[in-house]
Length: 536
Image (tube, rainbow, N blue to C red; front, side, top):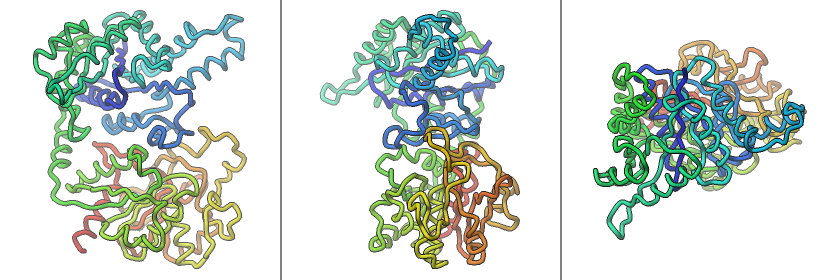
């Protein structure tokens, strides 16, 4: 039977439930268990697809085309296994499912209520991944903090689920804060006690407490927390601030979180965790032999979480190249023809980020013109690739008014146009080209050399595409379509012939970069930036 672990949070948000969940999953996976993680978010949006990145960070896209929470990115990067639509559920989706069934008459005239109908639907979703036989353990992260009005139905569903599943088939890990008061010069356990007390009021006794802290917990603090919160002293786990999130699995191993979990779930320890590859990655990450400065040009740079997968892909690629990638965020809205050279000077590579809409578009064009003309390594993703096409059209092909129809619906030269199947779409949520699609790489191209194979699949999130009416013009001038979708002829990758590294991808390669498999496009972009740095 599949075992279930629920991870709740208390005191404050952003304590790192996602990282703790991913780290525990990594440890259990390295012991030979088949593990997956799911995130239940208490907001009413059906999914994060329509949310501004400032609201909720980046929107992470799965292989099957689900727009999900950025925590799913952490799950995939740590476990190196893909997630799916079933791994991220929101309050909006739960209510939508229940209301659709009510409209169909499925409740036979009953009054539809939060308990039992909403909680039953939440419990059904808890179990979806556990029922297909693919996993031994399902870890469920409950978003928000205990006490939030919107997360109450999830907490109640956890209480019911635990009662129904039986004591050794599920457990609750509560992540809480043990703050250090500088004025008093000591750690304080009261916020944790209050958080657990609130959880107890909802009928849930946590089995394990993971305490986020800036200072080590001594034996007295652990004993006090254990005593007041009804847990064993070995179930009080210290989670101290780490220099990188990739340290956390090893910190949790030292605290024996995985052993405590297996004991409580009555599961055998199997073999000791094999984390040699993980330690090797950490060794290279922490001991770089070189450094490169790469500019990330985007319009959401005030919130680094908006580009979370990109910055993590740089960490993986940097470790692979034994080099520290220093990402410098550059606001595309502030780039002009007058200041672009000044703002970009000294960078050894420039990545132009994905995004939507007119704001900051011209700044991205300026950045691309500078790196193209000065032979600085360039990497464009999604809108970044489309900007490269527009820039090339304007300044090389002399199509002065070249543009994307997203920015100018009446442009004379629509080098980027709307995809045919997107033209009649009116609903914004979940209707873009989403998820994994195939791509054939052109023989002899830089892209084919980077991937080392002729056929790939990559994940998408867009409505606009390269306009194939201009394909020959671009190719003749030296911008090569080196990746093509075999089903519809969509240009997936463009590259410049006579440039050290100038690659734009319509898809999002950052979504597939993991610790175990750094993405080849990022690895090669960092290597090209490193080569440029050494030459200059």
